[in-house]
Image (cartoon, rainbow, N blue to C red; front, side, top):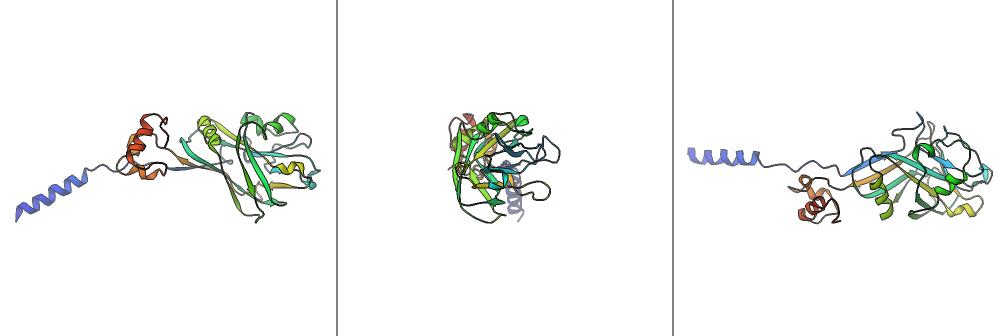
Amino acid sequence: MKRPRAVVMVVCAIALVVPAAAHAVTTQTFATSQSAFDPGVRNQGWWSPTFPNFAFNDNYVAGQPVDLGGSLYRNFFSFDLSSACPASSVTLQLTRFDQTGPLTYSLFDVSTPAATLNANEGTSQAIFDDLGSGTSFGSFPVADGGADDVLSFPLNAAGVAAFNAARGGFFSVGGKTPAEASFGNNIYGFSGPGAGGTQQLVVSCLPTTKDECKDGGWRNFPDFKNQGQCVSFVATGGEKTP
């Protein structure tokens, strides 16, 4: 009767030493409220070539709104990626707040340093141009909807590559709408203590160690079909993409 008990004890002991799958960070979120350049002001806003702005204003408008004198506006959002994982997908999420009608919203890379971008006093033709030119991160049709809706804009492959290249520093995205050419059309985001809303990047992470792939850990990363793919990705430093 003692021998079966010993077998059970051995089996239990073996079960205790089976390694658990390494904990993997699979999603990260970065908000414009983090690492603010101006305390209490989110790292977001707008630039116009003709209508002056103020650094404490973190409203974000893109288009040619009637109630702002008919000037042209492009917006921006900056994120601190000092703790960012390597990403397989990146989605910009914004609260709609105010929109005059259906439009197309286009996102671009930004070469202006984030600190300069967020010191948005006055006007600047150069920064305005920067926010709507260069590498496209995608264009998105935006239908009418509620003011509290959170809109999602998944960045294209160029946008994900730019995010990964910016890891360790700041990453900025510029936005414009072809409604600039149509007087009165715009998308207008209000922020500040009275509004708040969502302005963030939601990131799907890629593994950085082989241990994250083992013991079923590869299933935490939807880009991989099996453990071998996941381990190969890490072993090649990301050269062998999923």
